[in-house]
Amino acid sequence: MTEHSRAAQGKLALVTGAGSGVGRAIAIGLSKQGASVVLVGRRIAKLEETAASIRAEGGTAYSYAADVAKIEDVNAMAGHVLANYGVPAVVVNAAGVFKEIGPILESDPAGWMDTIVINTVSPYLVCRALAGEMVKQGWGRIINVTSAASLAEPEGTNSAYATSKVALNHFTRQLAAELAGTGVTANVFHPGEVKTEMFEAIRDTVRVPGELEDWVAWVERTGGDSPEKSVKLILDLLLPESDGITGRFLWIEDGLKKPMRSWD
Image 1 (cartoon, rainbow, N blue to C red):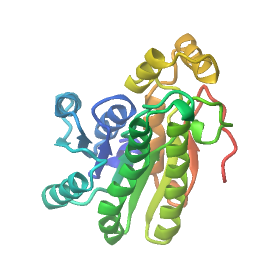
Image 2: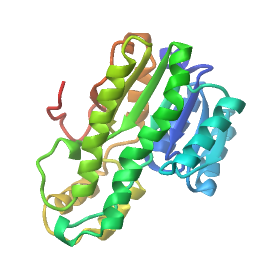
Image 3: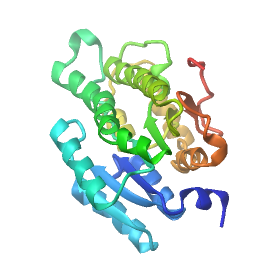
Image 4: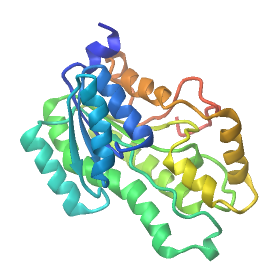
């Protein structure tokens, strides 16, 4: 048994956005190391695809369809999970969108606000609903998926997404400070330049020449980062030597993008 397997074995993990992209990869990766996984997302068919992959390898997965941007959905989900599966030791907030591409003065308020709600408010709702029970257990890992866009200089086409991730960073730092000494940690990480459904949506939508267009071309040219790099980072955080890592902006190993300066 590897050190990752020993760390994950028998733990319950909850992953939002588990139907596709990085969330799906993380859910499958945790399962392969022995964790039971609760898959949360809006599209039950996609969740069941992930669950089928996990069960085919002998793992345990539970699908729960919920819109994590809605208070009532999150509260119902948390109640169901706690009553039926137990307290998650690991919570990964991987659900996210990139809806608004363009200048602020030409933006659609509905899409702009939806980006903020899904990328920032959803992790807050999930953490609010579950972190208290994790504290009672005396150990836990809360991991929120952020982006290097939150650290970059503004370039004029993705204000909603970057703003949502800046806010998520600070929320996670605040949560880490409040949870200090409880055994529950909270961190954000940049998953790299991954060719997910979100990437495809950006590629098919961006029309304004600039850094975002250059980024799309770069990812296409290089093939992007493997989601397995995100899986390894999550598994590393489960190890005993990671107990003191909290309130941090973390980077995958050997990512295409060089780590940028953050608050730490």
